[in-house]
Amino acid sequence: MTYILSRRLRYLLFGVAIVSLAALAGAIYQAERTAADFAAFPPPGRMISLNGVNLHLYCLGSGTPTLVLEAGLGENVLSWHPVQTKLAQTMRVCAYDRPGLGWSDPIDTAIQPEEVAKNLHALLSNAGISPPFILVGHSRGGIYVRAFYHQFPEETQGMVLVDSTHEQSPMHQYPYAAWDYRKQAMLIAIAEPLSRIGLVRLLGIADADRRPSPLPAAILAAKTALQNRTDTAHAVVNEIAVMRQGLDSDTPHPGSLGNLPLLVLTAGNLVDLDFVAREAGRAGKDVEAEKALARIQQAEQDDLARLSSHSRHIIVSNSGHFIMQDQADEFVGAVSEFAKSFSLKSGGEGQTNDTAGLAQTAVQTGEFKP
Image (cartoon, rainbow, N blue to C red):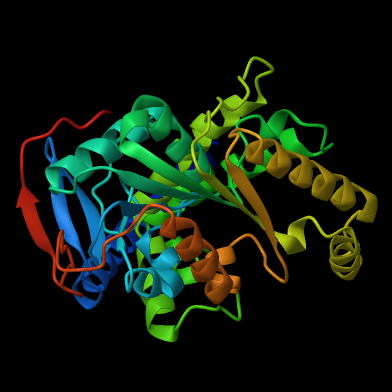
């Protein structure tokens, strides 16, 4: 009996040793590949330090006010690639990476939208970019730019919401909303430890974009490399932890924007019932449930457009959630037309072009809000 137990113990210890060695090898592989990715894909903009946390800021063009781009959940400055350069032909356009995303340093804790907004305000200040601003928020970024306006209304001259998330979105009557949020959080939580030992990278789980992608191959390669960072999974876990608070029935309605000039862009493919039904049928999904989700999406987008008494709502045809990629020309045209009313200057004043591929570290004083 003792011999049998001893043999089983040896097998167990041997198995543990094998798993430990594999995990160590995976961690070394992940660290080496991450370092190689950073060498192959240096940040196109500047690294600005906020109390020791370096955030990546990428600005092009000149003029005032400055168009500030806030990306969606888990996204980075490269999600704006199809439109930033075109917009910068007539105005100054700045995109940045939130902590742990893109090229920015990670932080340990989840932060509320109000703190995301304060960090963005400090980042712009430290970078020497003065108000006024036109804020552009995609998806989850729409919540962050609304939080910015409510804290700094005097510095906000206009706002563009790009298929923006609604603060109460999980509470609405879509039958699978709560499960979808919990499933998403669970999958990302599993991906985080796997990313530390290189499995996410090896298995291609963090594929950065749709296939085929509307992004150029070089941009897609850089975006995929950034998604494979361990820090990216951790940052997404943090953001989802805050997003799930929207499941609470006490989640407040989005705050009024008064008469702030507002442009709302809605993805046409997500609210077109015929398109939704056709795609649901092809994918074997519940057609009626998907149509119910499309109606909720339309209602939410209409609700966001009503936040300001000075708003325009455009449903962008033949576009999915990433309007700035699927319909880049229409996006640029709509945003440029919206910005004209603010008497933008396109001369040399306020020139802030960043050198592509060159990381410039600007260590300045400033408070980072954890």
